[in-house]
Image (cartoon, rainbow, N blue to C red; front, side, top):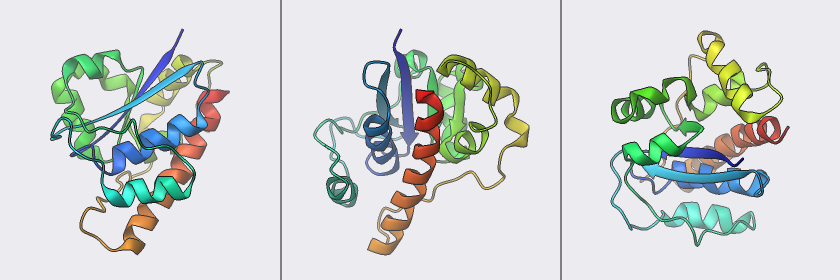
Length: 172
């Protein structure tokens, strides 16, 4: 069975496509599907050039990264939803309240995943949800849109570090 991961940010042009591409690069493509969406996205827009540049430097393809608006249908299909901020997490739950136990910020899930138990990704997500109150208080990834190259690099590194932990645990 394929496990579906959805990453979410505001416009789906920077943080969530970056997380999507980094996760896709690290997860077993035979077992995982990784997608992204935005809570205020313009369907069919363009991924931010700074994101494309940082992914290209890492040798990661960007051709599949096309912004799209989060819908209930998209959220319903996801087994794990990773958001850039706590506000995005709240907006996901407004769209699809049933996703509560499988929606986390990226940093929150990266902090919980090493302590979570489970032989498969679904069990891992369930265990992480039960530990949620033990998660970090600083769980947001700042929006780099309009910021300096250094800020973009810092966000990319922050996401890459978190995604590495998450992928390691999901892959088993």
